[in-house]
Image (cartoon, rainbow, N blue to C red; front, side, top):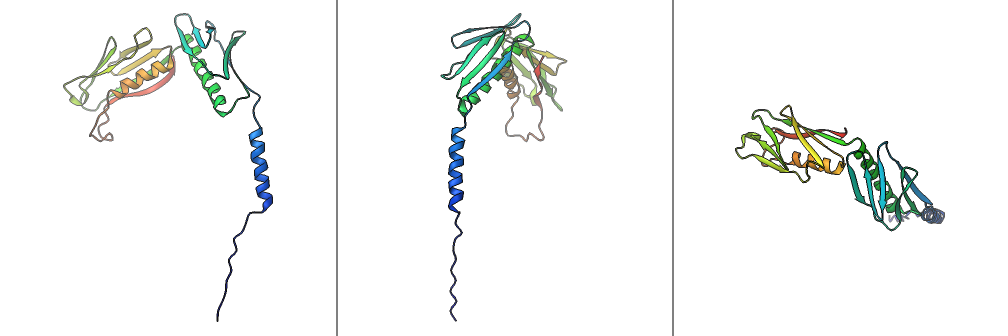
Amino acid sequence: IKVSCTITKRRRPASVGACWHMYSEVRKMVKLDQVRHVVTLHEGASVSIVGTSVTVSGAEQSITRDFSHKKVNVSEVEGSIIVQCDLPRRKEKAIAGTWRAHLTNMVTGVTEGFEYRLKAVYSHFPMSLSVNGNTFQINNLFGEKVPRKADLKWTPSDVQVRVENKVDVIVTGADREKVGQTAAIIERACRIRRRDRRVFQDGIYITQKGKN
């Protein structure tokens, strides 16, 4: 007895393909007319814009940063900083949001400042920490005879590093990126190799970061 069997593949209806095509076309057509972010200046802060360079000044410090793009613009209107872009695409919308975050950090930095806190942790070999100019020195990490040194990129006028209670390291400054990078350099100086970090946990770790 011969049995013949025919298997037919189920095809998607033509109407579904047509609807999907229409949806993709409509999705391409829908665009924002304008993206506009407003960054309010805190009391005691001022801004000056020269070309693509934006300078935010406070009572003691000032921060300058370059914002250059073909379509995204930065301007000052009635004591506020405006980030604006007409007919933005996805990348330009993202750039506008990034610029708003940078400007907000600049305003907060010159008025309140940023502070990162680190803590030295050890189980057997007590560490001693010191700051000498642009060098952060770590002595007796895991009993090492040669001290470890972290080169601080910025001067004390930009970023201040101090040691309190022998194990607490405080990094302060107006520029959030400089303060965060300095804290990361200090934390990275305690990197170890060929040892299990689950057992050998001595080092300096960031415990807190934010405004002053």
